[in-house]
Image (cartoon, rainbow, N blue to C red; front, side, top):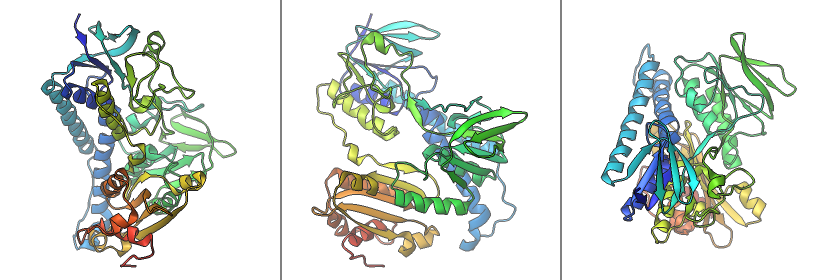
Length: 460
C-alpha cells in the first residue's frame, strides 16, 4: 500500500488549496472527495453559482429600471431563467475542471468517495470503488451543511435550503426567507429582482448579525426600499408544504403562506460519519473539531481547517488555513491573522467589513475614534449611478491603528481588500489618509473616511 505524506478529506476551498500547497512543498498528497465535482459547497452550490445569479438578476434590474438615467433606451426587457441557470452551471463546470487540472499539474491523487478515518493513519474511501489509504498526516476539511431548525420540514422542493434555491425552475410569486443573514439576503435579492415577493423572517431584532450594526441598519432601510419586507423579532415554529402551499407559523403571529420557503439560519460543521471517535479526534461544545493554534487536533498527525473548526465560515478563511496547515505539516511556519479576514455580502449595494465592529470595540472596552464618508460625495460613484452607502473606519483612539473598516456601497467587496491589507500591516488611519488614491475612483472614499477620523475630510 502506498503511503501518502498527506491525505486531505474534502476538496472544498480549504481542502483543495491545502492539497496544492502541500504538493508545492514537496509532499506526496491525496485528496478524498465524495462529490463528482471538486470545489466543495462554495464552488458547486454556494459562492460561485449565487454570484452568477446575482450578477444576472442585477443586470436585468438595471436594464428594466435604471438605464434611462444614462440615456440608454431599453424597451420590453425580459429574462430567460433557463439561460441564467445554464450560464451559472457553465461557470461552475469550468471552474471545477480547472481544479481537476491543478490536481494533475501538482500530481495530487484524487479519490472519489466518502472519507472516513479508521485510526492509525488510515482513511477508508467508501463508494463505488472502496479502498483504504495510509497517510503520515491527515487534514480534515469537510466543510459545513445548512443548519436545521426545529419545526421546519425541508423537502428540497418547496421548503428548501440555499442549494435548491439556486436552481428554481421558475420564479416563485411569494418567497419566505427564514433568517436575515448573508445566505438569505443574497438569494432573496436574486428572486426579488426577478419578480418574487420576498418576506424575510428574523429571530433577532436586526438583520445581518455579525455585521457592524450601524451599517446593517442603513442597509435594511435601502433593501426595504428595493422591495424586501423584513419582519424581525420573529420566532419561526414551523414550516411545511401543505395542501399545495407552504405554510410558515411564527410564535404569536398568524400563519404565512408562500410558494417557496428558504431556510437560511446558518450552517453547521460537517463532522458526521467521519470516524472521528475511532481516530481519537475530539469535538468542542458546539460540535466543531477542536484544534490548537497550529490546526492540530487531539489526535497525533491529524489536522483540521475551515468550517469544521471555530471561526467565520468563509471560503477565503478556509483557504488561508489550508495554506498555513500545509506549511506547518511540511515543517515550515504557518499562521492566519483572523483580525484581517474580510467578509462580503453580495447585495446591491454590497456590504463588506474587516476587523472589529463598533459593537465589539464597545464590549471589549477598547477606546476608538471613527470616520466615515458617503459615496454620494464621490465623483466616480455619481458617474456610475451608485451613490448609496458609505465607508466607515474605526481606529484606536490612542495609537490611530486601524481596528476595523466597514463599507456599504458599490463594489465594496473589491474595496475591502485595501482595508484587509492595512490591518495586516498594522497601518494607521493617517497612513491611509496620506496615501495617494487615484482620481476618480471609489477608493477615494476610503481615503476620505481616513481623513474624517480626525475631522479632516476634504470633500464634505
